[in-house]
Image 1 (tube, rainbow, N blue to C red):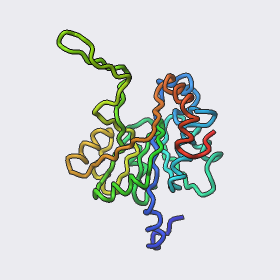
Image 2 (image 1 turned 120 degrees about the vertical axis):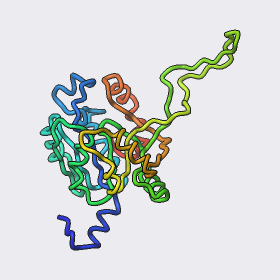
Image 3 (image 1 turned 180 degrees about the vertical axis):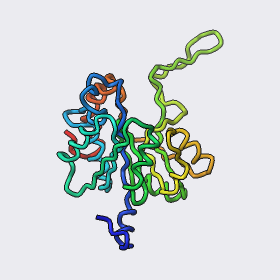
Image 4 (image 1 turned 135 degrees about the vertical axis):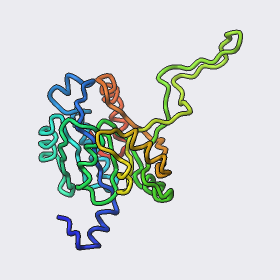
Length: 248
């Protein structure tokens, strides 16, 4: 238990962020899996997506997790009882059917320092040390992890006479997408409103000059649909090797 009168213990707790994992949505696009399971427990190579995520974050030094649950919360609570490691501190905060920002604000009393906000349906071989160093160097209130946007289509360029002069198969586009893993100082949450969304939160931080981007060029998987889950199944062996832990 945290002794708030012990400065050394508080400093130690604040040296690594608490992972605040958003895993309360219904995941309707992943039916029929999510008729019986919350989205975060949908299996990849025989283990829940949430377990892969927590295992990797644990390798980065994170041992405190707050799971923002809602839909089928009892399933995730059972997962925590059965699958948590001995050195993990895991708390489930059930906000019911509400907004992402409400879930995060409800979780904050369980977060003693920085928070690493994660989506429960995304895996990435994130270099957490590099993210924190860049965050510190920028003096950021929050740092958002971004990833190059890959076109899902082949791109064709042609001249004025319609002669094709270049073809590119699913190229990287000059844009970046948000893949979550948002590192936040406690003061950042002054910009978060209830019954709102992450976009408005990010916009408020950006207007205040406190939001920065960390460019992730490694690997990442997003599982929103059954097609994406099947693709992730095929990629998971290689991905687990890149992430450097025994996921299967």
